Length: 227
Image 1: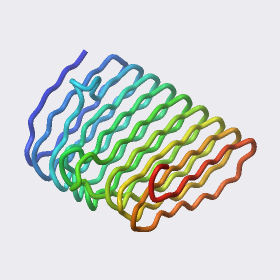
Image 2: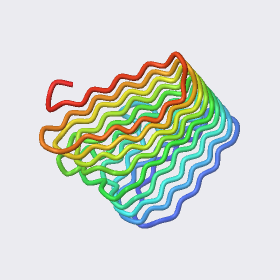
Image 3: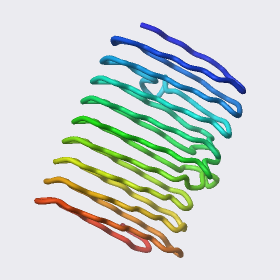
Image 4: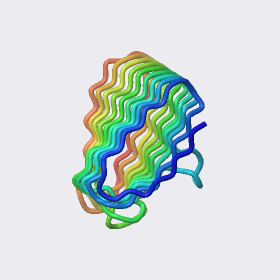
């Protein structure tokens, strides 16, 4: 088992882990970080529970997390990350990702990309909880079966682009606040379930869904309150 706890300012960091049971914990404050993590094998972890997450705070960061294998975990709190680029690529089954973004500061002008290939992967995304956590651009590419994505956005201008290919995937998102939310979904497969709730008291909600699917369920609620 590896346990690494670091405090970094302006730096370039790269980690590679093979086999399994590798643990990585990072606490980062500062601007201009470039972080690359490659974990190959099963049961690797970047962060674990709420008290042992990866915590990142700083502008103009570049983060690239690649996990290849089954039952890997990526749990992180991105406290601040404006003008930053984030990539999490997972290949395998039964992987878990939990990201809390913009809990206390700005993530405007950032790009968050998630790509999953495999089955029974679970990804939970929460953006908001602070008025200053203005929206970033979020792109999700999911290929496989029985994958679950749950997204919550509580801030200004959330932009989401999803491409979901496979069967029995479940996509759920809730967006709230006065702020021009936008979701584009490309859905291919069978028995997929998509639920979109967009609440906006004064601006425009957009949901653009392109679906090539059988036995699918799509629920869209757009309202001023109470979705």
